[in-house]
Amino acid sequence: MITCGVCDNSLGGRHNLCTERDLIGMYRAGAFAEKIAIPGRNLIPVPDGMAGAHAALTEPGATGLHAALLAERSSHRPLSESRALVIGAGSVGLLTALILRDKGVTDIVVAETNPLRRELVEQHCDFELIDPVQEQADAQHFDCVFDAVGGAVTREQAVLACRSGGVIVHIGLMDNLGGLDVRSMTLREITFIGAYTYTPVDLRVTLQKLNSGALGSLGWVEQRPLSAGAEAFDELLKGRCAAPKIVLQTV
Image (cartoon, rainbow, N blue to C red):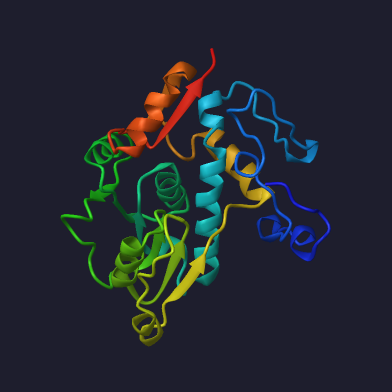
């Protein structure tokens, strides 16, 4: 995230809300370019001995941390006392669940449609997993719901699953086709928060957590050679990939 550095949001630590923000890998050339230029202030030192594949989780992990912090500020009870539902077990969703666990949340359900991914996550992370196509999450049961997909269907599921007075944090950006029962949200005083990326501090904290082991062994990360990149993208698009995160290695 590259920001102007002088607006109120940038100076106030909310770099992700800078109206002049720019993104490496979206609007600027990213990791698949032959060469990229990055402002020095955007560089974060990686701890000695940390695996590159684990350091690569900093960006999606910081997105999850930012979402958890937003929920924490708006929740009526401490986050550690909350029942949480995470919709989507891609890298952002799974890391959100792991961050919630690190924050003391013990009642976490992860909803994921990909059976291969559910099996892999269950092996490495020991979360309660459900297939939302076959099994709906308990209605009005969860204090916090994190939608890491961001589709009309998942937004509808989030409202149904959130208890009165609860919090929905919307992370994903799959579509903008509706899915919110605003009347139900109003009658039940549900707080809906849009969570966009992260701040520089979120990135630094996440890197430390990943390196310290606070987020688990990270054995669910799959590493492949760069030459296998096209195949990896094809598997992801067609739902044939179990890994929430594939890291392509040049050596």
